[in-house]
Amino acid sequence: MKIKHTRDTLSDVYVQSLKIRNTVFVKEQQVPLSLEIDKDEAYAVHFVLLLDDQDETAVSTLCILPSANGEQALIQRVATLKPYRGQGYAQKLMVHVLDFLQSQHFKIVELHAQIQAIPFYEKLGFESFDDIFLDAGIQHVAMKKIV
Image (cartoon, rainbow, N blue to C red; front, side):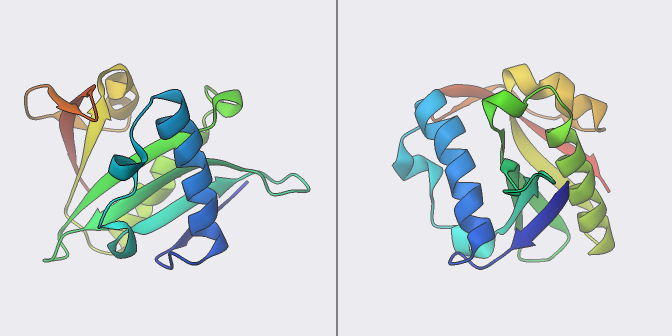
Protein backbone atom coordinates (compact mmCIF):
# COMPACT_ATOMS: atom_id res chain seq x y z
CA MET A 1 0.00 0.00 0.00
CA LYS A 2 1.16 3.51 -0.78
CA ILE A 3 -0.37 6.95 -0.55
CA LYS A 4 0.27 9.68 -3.09
CA HIS A 5 -0.87 13.28 -3.13
CA THR A 6 -0.96 16.18 -5.55
CA ARG A 7 -2.22 19.70 -6.14
CA ASP A 8 -1.91 19.22 -9.91
CA THR A 9 -5.34 18.72 -11.48
CA LEU A 10 -3.64 17.32 -14.59
CA SER A 11 -1.80 14.55 -12.72
CA ASP A 12 -2.54 10.83 -12.65
CA VAL A 13 -3.18 11.04 -8.90
CA TYR A 14 -5.92 13.61 -9.42
CA VAL A 15 -7.47 11.53 -12.22
CA GLN A 16 -7.45 8.45 -9.97
CA SER A 17 -9.12 10.48 -7.22
CA LEU A 18 -11.81 11.68 -9.61
CA LYS A 19 -12.54 8.13 -10.77
CA ILE A 20 -13.14 6.98 -7.19
CA ARG A 21 -15.25 10.05 -6.39
CA ASN A 22 -17.30 9.59 -9.57
CA THR A 23 -18.00 5.94 -8.70
CA VAL A 24 -18.85 6.55 -5.04
CA PHE A 25 -20.56 9.93 -5.03
CA VAL A 26 -21.98 10.44 -8.51
CA LYS A 27 -22.94 6.86 -9.42
CA GLU A 28 -23.68 5.28 -6.02
CA GLN A 29 -25.01 8.26 -4.09
CA GLN A 30 -26.49 10.18 -7.04
CA VAL A 31 -24.63 13.42 -6.24
CA PRO A 32 -24.80 15.70 -9.30
CA LEU A 33 -21.43 15.98 -11.03
CA SER A 34 -21.79 19.77 -10.90
CA LEU A 35 -21.71 19.57 -7.08
CA GLU A 36 -18.99 16.93 -6.86
CA ILE A 37 -16.41 18.87 -8.85
CA ASP A 38 -16.30 22.44 -7.63
CA LYS A 39 -14.30 25.65 -7.87
CA ASP A 40 -11.89 24.57 -5.12
CA GLU A 41 -10.37 21.56 -6.93
CA ALA A 42 -7.21 23.45 -7.90
CA TYR A 43 -6.69 24.73 -4.35
CA ALA A 44 -7.04 21.34 -2.67
CA VAL A 45 -4.45 18.67 -2.01
CA HIS A 46 -5.75 15.35 -3.38
CA PHE A 47 -4.71 12.06 -1.75
CA VAL A 48 -5.08 8.54 -3.13
CA LEU A 49 -4.36 5.21 -1.43
CA LEU A 50 -3.03 2.59 -3.85
CA LEU A 51 -2.68 -1.13 -3.34
CA ASP A 52 0.63 -2.93 -3.82
CA ASP A 53 -0.84 -5.04 -6.61
CA GLN A 54 0.54 -5.10 -10.16
CA ASP A 55 -1.79 -2.31 -11.30
CA GLU A 56 -1.37 -0.15 -8.18
CA THR A 57 -5.16 -0.08 -7.87
CA ALA A 58 -6.46 3.19 -6.44
CA VAL A 59 -9.06 2.26 -3.81
CA SER A 60 -9.52 5.24 -1.47
CA THR A 61 -9.28 9.01 -1.76
CA LEU A 62 -9.85 12.31 -0.03
CA CYS A 63 -8.79 15.90 -0.41
CA ILE A 64 -7.91 18.69 1.97
CA LEU A 65 -8.69 22.33 1.46
CA PRO A 66 -6.37 24.58 3.49
CA SER A 67 -7.70 27.84 4.91
CA ALA A 68 -6.17 31.13 3.82
CA ASN A 69 -4.45 31.57 7.19
CA GLY A 70 -2.83 28.13 7.01
CA GLU A 71 -4.06 27.08 10.46
CA GLN A 72 -7.20 25.17 9.49
CA ALA A 73 -7.96 22.56 6.87
CA LEU A 74 -11.19 21.02 5.63
CA ILE A 75 -11.11 17.32 4.75
CA GLN A 76 -13.46 16.57 1.89
CA ARG A 77 -14.59 13.80 -0.46
CA VAL A 78 -13.50 10.82 1.64
CA ALA A 79 -14.39 7.80 -0.48
CA THR A 80 -13.46 4.14 -0.83
CA LEU A 81 -14.55 1.90 -3.67
CA LYS A 82 -17.23 -0.58 -2.57
CA PRO A 83 -15.20 -3.83 -2.96
CA TYR A 84 -12.51 -2.40 -0.64
CA ARG A 85 -14.69 -0.99 2.16
CA GLY A 86 -14.37 -2.37 5.66
CA GLN A 87 -10.70 -3.28 5.17
CA GLY A 88 -9.19 -0.25 6.92
CA TYR A 89 -8.07 1.66 3.84
CA ALA A 90 -9.97 4.86 4.63
CA GLN A 91 -8.67 4.77 8.19
CA LYS A 92 -5.06 4.37 6.97
CA LEU A 93 -5.58 7.24 4.55
CA MET A 94 -7.11 9.46 7.26
CA VAL A 95 -4.26 8.74 9.71
CA HIS A 96 -1.72 9.54 6.98
CA VAL A 97 -3.48 12.82 6.17
CA LEU A 98 -3.82 13.82 9.83
CA ASP A 99 -0.06 13.22 10.25
CA PHE A 100 0.56 15.26 7.09
CA LEU A 101 -1.57 18.14 8.43
CA GLN A 102 0.23 18.07 11.75
CA SER A 103 3.62 18.12 9.99
CA GLN A 104 2.44 21.19 8.07
CA HIS A 105 1.53 22.92 11.36
CA PHE A 106 -2.23 23.02 10.90
CA LYS A 107 -4.08 23.49 14.20
CA ILE A 108 -7.68 22.49 13.45
CA VAL A 109 -9.12 20.02 10.98
CA GLU A 110 -12.80 20.03 10.05
CA LEU A 111 -14.93 17.80 7.89
CA HIS A 112 -18.57 17.30 6.99
CA ALA A 113 -19.46 13.71 7.79
CA GLN A 114 -22.34 11.79 6.31
CA ILE A 115 -24.47 10.62 9.23
CA GLN A 116 -23.58 6.93 8.84
CA ALA A 117 -19.85 7.80 8.94
CA ILE A 118 -19.90 9.66 12.27
CA PRO A 119 -18.65 6.65 14.32
CA PHE A 120 -15.73 6.23 11.90
CA TYR A 121 -14.61 9.83 12.42
CA GLU A 122 -15.22 9.72 16.17
CA LYS A 123 -12.73 6.81 16.40
CA LEU A 124 -10.20 9.14 14.79
CA GLY A 125 -10.83 11.82 17.44
CA PHE A 126 -13.29 14.07 15.62
CA GLU A 127 -16.19 15.65 17.51
CA SER A 128 -19.48 17.00 16.14
CA PHE A 129 -20.00 20.72 16.66
CA ASP A 130 -23.11 21.70 14.75
CA ASP A 131 -26.59 20.59 13.74
CA ILE A 132 -27.34 18.13 10.97
CA PHE A 133 -27.54 19.75 7.52
CA LEU A 134 -28.14 18.62 3.95
CA ASP A 135 -25.35 18.60 1.39
CA ALA A 136 -26.27 17.29 -2.06
CA GLY A 137 -29.47 15.96 -0.47
CA ILE A 138 -27.51 13.82 2.04
CA GLN A 139 -27.54 14.39 5.82
CA HIS A 140 -24.20 15.58 7.19
CA VAL A 141 -22.81 16.94 10.43
CA ALA A 142 -19.78 19.21 10.89
CA MET A 143 -16.95 17.68 12.89
CA LYS A 144 -13.55 18.95 14.01
CA LYS A 145 -10.33 17.81 15.59
CA ILE A 146 -7.37 19.65 17.07
CA VAL A 147 -4.12 18.34 15.53
